[in-house]
Length: 637
Image (tube, rainbow, N blue to C red; front, side):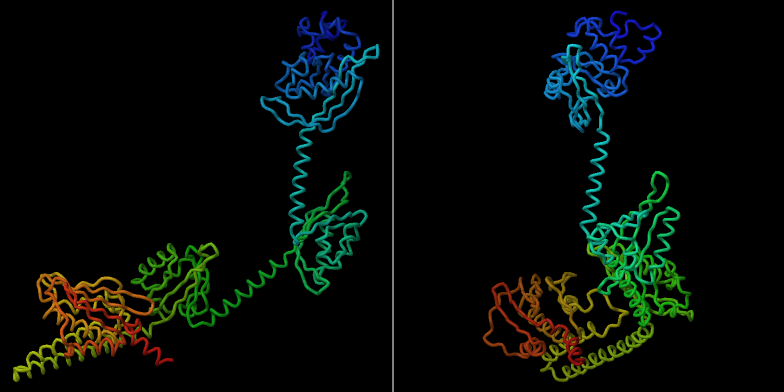
């Protein structure tokens, strides 16, 4: 074959050589159109250099002549990736346009008979369809003919991309590790040369073990570091080190160190022996982490837990706690004394079996609501006592939140209120009996007044007014009579709006309320209800005689306002006859109103006779509405 690099080779030898696809490419390539011409016309020196390159395993490429025609072996073909075989026989600057200037400089140097090496040379090549960084060791030398001139440049290519990337990744990892270690005072590192017993350590490790940092950095026997270990731990640590050396296993130990100031610090040390090529342990590197603060926190937590359990066990109430999902995980001693259950037997949801069957669903519904909303839990239910009877208890619980507002757990109590519940029921019966007797007294008074009025007709108008005022007092008494917890929470009970609605019922017409309350409401007690009842009775009576309530379409609007210290009521009449300010205000009703507001309740009262109707403004101290509570507090103090 005239185009073969081995024209004198036997057919079987040529066939064997052409098993290399790149060598076969030399023989099948159309050299007639190439600047190098046909292979038989090449200089013998060039053909010999090419033969040497083709049988080499190392990637090699030639840039021949001034144009740098590319000739390369199979190793370089693999290096070129998808660019092979299109770049075979092309000028180097056309084959690799992305590095044209780089190749031009190298071609010129080779033609000048220079030899040189580039280590970890980074180039961006498009070998697989897109540019990618590639690192290589490149060894350049000229291709010299027998006349001593250069025919081109030979390059031996060792791609180092994987090695460079691995080294950079390792460097980044080591940098991050160094930053992590150097950025904290809690971690120290050591490296023990076991064969020569020289242990080197960083500054933090040296500080932990009371060593001079320079001496620790240069290396010192292991025994020098062991001296800092607490006497009660040093023997155990020595045995653990010996085991790690003997068995070649991981060493991990937690022990105490004594500082030069007498302070004790806790560390966790971890390392693993390293073997040399002959299997002998020659190094023992590792780290030590200062966990003193964690130990202190754990001790403080244990002490806090002990205090909590001691406190809860000395309380008369039953104390319990749950996880955020409501799973019970703690009951104090009082709970087990009360229920008679074995300790731990009511953890989880089993405690619900302790409820009275009639209270069970109500208690669970309220508890589920609190778990969903985080609202405080408070409910009364009956729990089974160890005697077998069910006793009334008051259950309360509050959630404990973290800094983000999430519930960490619930702490609750159960208080035995059985005896006080029975006593309250007895007080309720007594209160009802007293109320009944007081109402009988009001009825007797009204009867006496009516009898007197029949025998003395001239006092009938006064008698009717007196009877109405006694009626108002009776309504006020019946409204705010002492209430037990059995009736607490009845709709409107104890609120000013409900008292007014009750007093104004006689003035409704055809089922339509003619006295409307709106605005801020207020709670009233038994001490405040009486003067308030007299006030509104007198205002309504006068309105029915002379004002808005004397007309079928007349209306009264009562509006409440609250500020931090006072409560203000505004009585406004509309739809009645025109009113004018009287020449004189001095009747019994007027004096009674002033006595109620200004005397008993320490308030202020203003009247304004406007064309559309009377306006009365009453301003009261807030504590005047709950005077009985204030008086009780003053009595206690």
